[in-house]
Image (tube, rainbow, N blue to C red; front, side, top):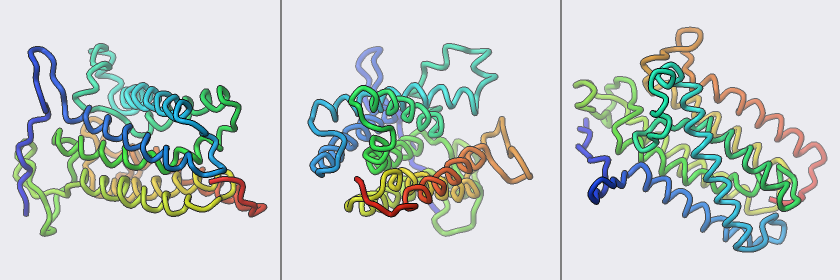
Length: 265
């Protein structure tokens, strides 16, 4: 059994300015996406052909993540609190970002960016799919540092006590998600996309793999206290939102390999 370390969520304070670990994790994620994108850009089938386009892509993606992630959290998880305290929407350093909202925000941003550079929506999403996982992993580290999104009680030897919650050993679900959604998801997508694949295939694999991992993790993560279980006395909001991703991923993979003709990765 482990004890959750008492980590200050503020990395550095300069007068009234506070630099939070959570924000640093996002910065690391965007920087990693740019670096990995520069590697993928070297492929002859890449829709992104120069550093300026890549920088613009990351900028569009960052806007989609931040705006969509915050709006998604408010809409899916905290709408009534927002009605009482609307200014809370700007306090992203306290956590409260929804992956599914950020995902929708990125999709919208990529649609606009694809139109800007005259490339199809799926050409862009196939390009960015492997880049997203590192940011997901660093985001979960940020959740861990903030001491949020802890797991359900467990008697496993690696259970962790979160003293600010109670004295029960719990699943360190943030670290599970960092491993599955960050390290393993990235490895699968990066290896899969090293060869030319039919259009939509990489995007489809991302949806299937993330949807499966997230659905699985929710069984050991505590549901949001103000929401509880959404359906069947076991399904959480995270699982409910992940099911459409899983289904859509399967559909995209079937469509991608219908003719089995590699076009790009």
